Length: 370
Image 1 (cartoon, helix red, strand yellow):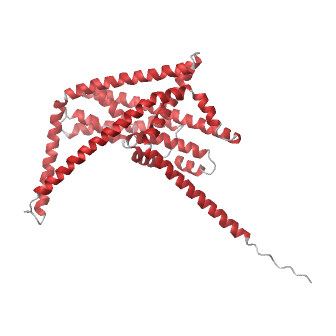
Image 2 (image 1 turned 90 degrees about the horizontal axis):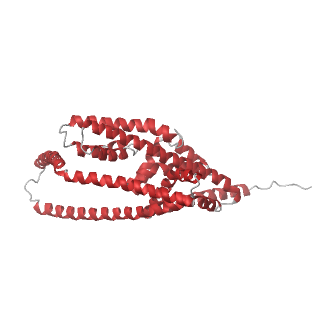
Image 3 (image 1 turned 90 degrees about the vertical axis):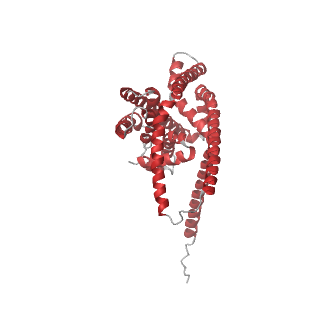
């Protein structure tokens, strides 16, 4: 009589262990790839930032080039005209700012006196606190002259090193800015060729999804740039009228700097206080007027963040407050001030890509969860 023994089913655990190993390997590969990308963004920051700024400007100016193209102007010539127009407008604004800053420098002694008075009063208070703390210490009679000289010497070297570091970073900014007009022209003039070449990088079965993703990215970036420009214009004009009504000197220059700084999410409301404080010290010598100015700038920031920005930008850029805060911290740490400006468009682009990439949809939902 034949008897059949039950066969052992051992391949299933082996398959599950193998699949788990593959998933772990895929996760490790993604983490390593993300680390490589972040390191490249840090060490090649000048190149990456120049490319990103050029792309944002290209998205902003592309409707103008398309409009000229509808007027039977060749796209290359239209791109050249738009780039020259932008350079002329920026040059005019820069020249106006230089003239106003030259006037501000000539009047600097008038602004320096109240600043010196405020600084001296703060130093006197700090010296009083330091003396009271020294009286509480056990070793009051020990000489500290040599240590003090050594500290001052180290601070002088640190200050000199900081100055050289600032000059080198400023040089890299100027060097990167010289490439922006050329990149902008090529991006505008060769838009169709670049689009077609980009489609050829992907298999034919994935090109429809890639095209939809790029269209969504274009809509998001264009909406963000145009909306942010409109909100910034409203903030500058509102601040200008407010400073002019107060009778402050250099009202337009102060409003321009303060309004642009006020665009930075969360931190902008505090950053916008610095230029108006510097100018208003000549006129006001008590804390009450400054509190009123800070309150008005805070109101401008709240209206811009909760009314204007959602109406002009928020319909396309769907990011929650936590994602925006983390993005500001990360890109601000990586690139400094320019990182605060580019944080939102970069994060919005990542969200669009995750929404159209299989397996990354949860990341896109987390970035847009409200």
